[in-house]
Length: 247
Image 1 (tube, rainbow, N blue to C red):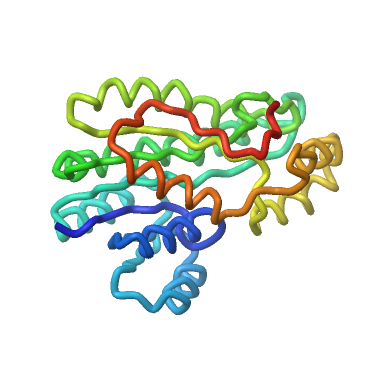
Image 2: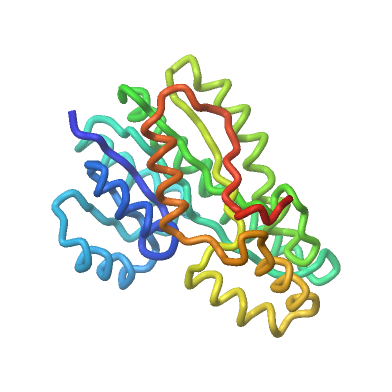
C-alpha cells in the first residue's frame, strides 16, 4: 500500500520543504496551496509522479472538503496530514481591529479544523496515521507585538493534546511542531513589515537572537516531520524547534 500524505501550504517555505522530504521518503503527496504559481514551480523542480497538486484556499471549508475528499477517494487512505497554513498579523492588542482577530482565527485555527475533518475518514484507513500541526514557539513565549498570531497559534497546543487523546482509539497520532525563527520568504516578508511597525524592530531583535547564533532552516522542520511519521508511539507531543530561542 502506497504511503500517502497531504500537505497544506505546500507551494513555499516550510510546506514546500516538507513536500520534498516526504516524496524523498517514498510518499505520494497532495500539495495544497492557494498560489498556483508556487505550485507550478515545485512541480517543475521535482518533476515527480509522486507529487499531485491542487490550488485551494484552505480557509474555504467547501473547497477543502472537495479537494481532500476527491484525493482520499482516489487513494483510499491518507497516512499523513500536515497542517502548515498560517498567517502572522503584527500588532499589539491596542493596534488590532476585530477583523484582524477574525483573519488570524480563520487562518491559524479554522484551516486546521477543516483539513482534519475532511481527512479523518481516510486517516482511519491508514496503518500508521499522523496529523501534524504547525504552531509556533511564540505560542509559549506570548509575544505582545504579534498577539493575534500568538494567541491563535497557542490554541493549537491544547487542541493537539485533546485530539491526540480523542483519536488514539482509532490509532491516529496527533503532534505539534513549534518552530522558532526559520529562514523562509515568509520571514523575509515579516522583516520588511516589522521594520515599519511600532515594536517591530524589538520583535525582530528577539527573533534573530538564538543561542545557536542562526535561524533555523526549513529543511530542519521537514526532517522533524519525517522523524515523527517514522515512529509509532509519539502522540500528543509538542516539539520545539527553535535553536534554544525559548530558553
